[in-house]
Image 1 (cartoon, helix red, strand yellow):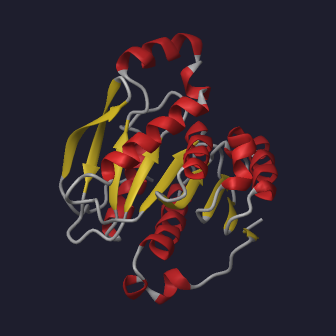
Image 2 (image 1 turned 90 degrees about the horizontal axis):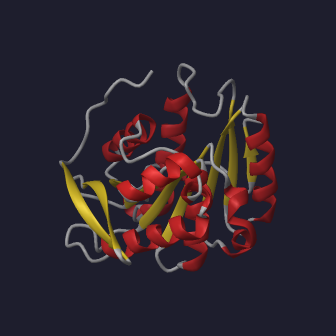
Length: 242
């Protein structure tokens, strides 16, 4: 299911200042880059998540730069393994996404690019909170099997077009996404991938996620003259494939 696809651009290790800590990330910038997507991983995951890296490969082929980063330091990860506290600290995670976005805006090869967020699990909630706090920075959001409900009162404040993707067999998370979807006031869409469980491990399901994410980011991050007719097609404010 998750075979490596041809990638675009060279990936490099970067250090991202976030308050009193420095976070490690992997930045890939295709040539030419037409937008940049910052990944917010989910509970107990990291920038090495094979699912997020698969999606990043697909985005790179569409000319989108990607930043996969660790939202926690190694010491914080060690504590989180025991307490599971940090992974649900949405304010902390959102603050670090904002710090990463500000860092992206200061790099010579990404400063001119529109920024999108790709969040998974609890990272989906953090992405929405960060977008609500900094509407000037964030231009599109995709959540994969996310917990947008964790964004709470920030949901109606989100301005960035938001795509929620959920597995058709992930019943509890589907309901949480529907509740969050109803609170969003931005351009929005909910896609339910038939037959998929929470981690999208079933054949072909992660590929569907990657295509949906690619088309959403191409539609909202790329300059109009760079968008394909296929990416511009389709409605909004709908529940897809339910």
